Image 1 (spheres, rainbow, N blue to C red):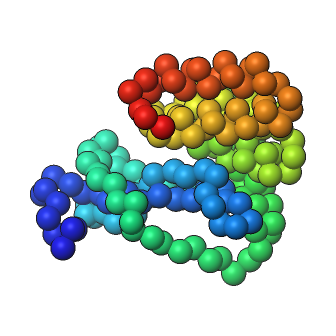
Image 2 (image 1 turned 60 degrees about the vertical axis):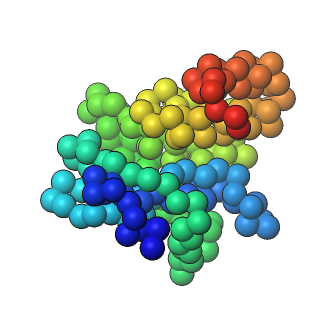
Length: 177
């Protein structure tokens, strides 16, 4: 019933994507992604890893539904998937940088997550912040900054982490979170 009651202009239903979770399956990083779309020829899958739907004309008019649950249970281990994704992203970023092109927010974030997972916090933190700087989505931007702060906290760089948290508050002063 909820879906049928949406206005005609709504062409996407967003649901949370639990990108990083604890061993108890509690989400540490949650990103909004379009999960159900009213398809037209302008929807495109982008990114070679953790593909994302994007509307080529920028005419994405979505509503969120946190009660929509999609389970992802790939047949390979977390470590195998992480290694595969990191190799794909690293190669792509190297090719882009060699050609003098810009590295996207998503690419920086993907590399940062892998470095974070492997305990390389000093390398991960600046990539999270670079991803935040490049993202046009406020939710993503805040999540990326938060992950960078977690990396800084792990490094014992509490003052710098605090300054970045203040940056988050400046970006979204009216958000109760």
